[in-house]
Image (cartoon, rainbow, N blue to C red; front, side, top):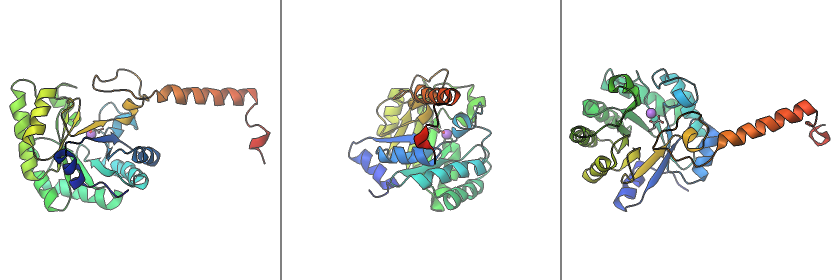
Length: 264
Ligand code: KIV
Ligand code: NA
C-alpha cells in the first residue's frame, strides 16, 4: 500500500470518511499499527509521560524526540508520520520552529510536524509551510501550556468557543493541513470541523471530527491509575505482559526454563 499523504487526509473529509491516528514511539508498535490500517502515526511528546516517566510533557527535548521519531519511521511503511515539536523548540520565533522541524524531517524522516498553539502561532505555521514542512495545528487543551491553563481542563466552553474557532480559522489560513482539538465540547468541535475546509482530528472532542487520536498506552491498557474520560480501552496489555513475566519468573525459579529444547 502506498504512503498516506496530507492530501489523502483531505480526501477523507471530502468523502465523509474517518481516519484513525495513534501515538507510536518505537518500530514494533509502528509496524503493528501500520499493519492494522492506522492512517496516521503521531510521535507525540507524550513520550515524556508514557515512555520517559515524567509528570508533564515539558522536559522532553528535541534530540530525544528525534530518537523516538527515527524508530517510528523505521517501522511505518504506509502511515503518515507526524511528530510533535516539543516544548522549547519553536516558541521563540518562526525561524526556531523551522530549524527544529528541519532537524525532525532530515534526521528522523518524519513527514509533518504538530505544533501546539492558537492564532498567535499563525506566523510560525506560515514559515513552516513556506519551508516545505506540513503542519498539523493543535488547539483546545495543549499540554505544554498546562501551567497556564491550570491543569487538564476542557477548553472552548462558553465564550471560549468563539476564540477556539478563531484560532482554528487563523491556523488554517496560515496553511495548516489539519487542526487537532484536545478536550473540547463535542458541539464546539463539530462547529470547527464544519467551518474549516481542512480536516480536524479529535481527542476528547466528540465524534464529528474527520480523525480521532488516542495514546496507545491508554488505548491498550498499559498505563495504571486514572484513565481520562475520553479514552476507550481496547485491550489489557498490562495484565497480559504481567502474566507472562510472572510465568517466566516462576519457570526460572522452578528450574523449568530453559527446557532441553532451548539448549544447544
Ligand atoms: O503527544 C500526544 O500524544 C498528543 C496527542 C494526545 C494528541 O499530542
Ligand atoms: Na503532544
